[in-house]
Image (cartoon, rainbow, N blue to C red; front, side, top):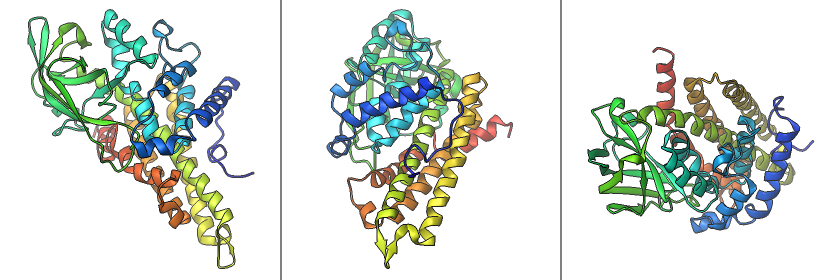
Length: 390
């Protein structure tokens, strides 16, 4: 059997016919609507607006959200979400998924903790693809260490007055709302709250960060808040309890990134095997050189191990017993697996891999943002150590 994207992973005993049908449906959609154009979108630095509405009609945007708001939650589990992230990673243009699916980090706090009239205004609009939402946490002086953020929100009657800035915000240039971490109290995690800030409000501005190593198709922004008056009813959850809202959100983001990184590693393996079969050096195929065969075997071995880790953590999530520390360590292993496979695939492809336009070249450039985004490898290790009482 040819070693392709599908066979480059372990069999998953938890998948049903419904899961396989979902994958087939997604693959047909992405093969028609995205794969032929994704490289050009990456070069252009944006994806077309109609992709959001088409994806909404496919049920992609609303996967896992309540039917009350236009989502699909009945019968949906972690495996449906994993399959979506795997199929997005198969495209080989990380910026497409980062931009198209950014609502999955910006919207859950609103759907889970906002007042009902805010939910009714925001959630259906985002799930239909008509409006956009982003998550604003990282600041120039505070990244993975959320407890140190400095953007302030001071209560003034029926409003909060927000001052500060956020940076490296995925989807920030096109967002209609930003789910924003702010400081309403004292130092540390206990003084953090979460506000939903409309981007058409006076005092809000943004600039594009468009000179990036990877994820070119995903818009990235720095956001500025200059005496922005946000209605008090835009508070998400309770005042000074925003840290818990954010931490709950991080587990889902890190799982999604982990699955996508394993998918990217599988793309690298698929491309490397195909090239090793085709390319000839010194009178024989690359695949007939032992050093190349060992590289491919090492890639498959690491993907297998990481795939198994993903399956175990996914089952724990399905059972409601997941560990934030283990999810953090999973993300580290996935980014290391992605990096190893991207490097080895680049070596096997040689000059062909170095030229822009191929999936491996893009994935190689996107390794670092995956190793940093959602919590850097170093912070993930430290978080895990704290979870285990160290």
